Length: 252
Image (tube, rainbow, N blue to C red; front, side):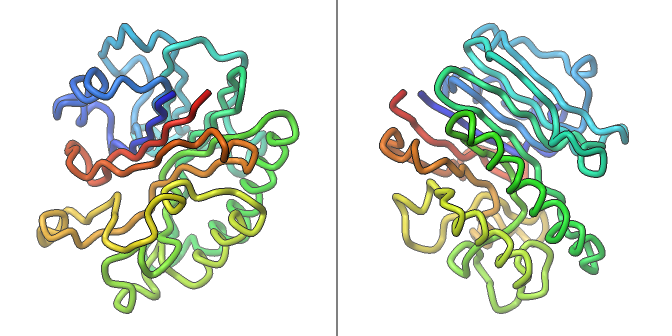
């Protein structure tokens, strides 16, 4: 089973940059998108192999948003964490299948001046960890999405210059470590231990061409799914957004 995740930074813009061709070529069984910036009725696209679609749009128009597409029907779909404080921006879709629950998430950015750092670390991250742990009591969980943090120094091209940048502060990195300490598996690091692998590049200064990037897009899985994990990868060759897709293969 092929699972893919991609922050498209606006699905309507990405549609004009080869999105459907990408889906046809890669044939994911489940595809999670973040930062869709649209409601479903605003998007004119047909994916005949992915009849089952779920959208979660922000209350604020043209902002944030997530979507999940699958080849087979989910047993249950819920939106958000069930907490109004966190559920106004369309950031989470929980999609239950036979063998696992697929959680697609777009984690809030701490923003310039770290003005949203406290909310991000002390409110959102704490609530989200509790949320996926609660789901895990029912079935193993696959978490995918833009988690807006480079966990380790090897996950960012220029760590020393970015210690106080949103997404690489000590507070955010320590907060992400809570997932690992709780047993969640960073799938990419199960196969690749070295630096130089990134999923986001600034549009400025030709950063992508020079591979001056950040790894902030992840697949995390419950420990029970580790025996089924066959590979994990990043697709920097895929254009269409400032992020690239990431994927895993599960033998399920």
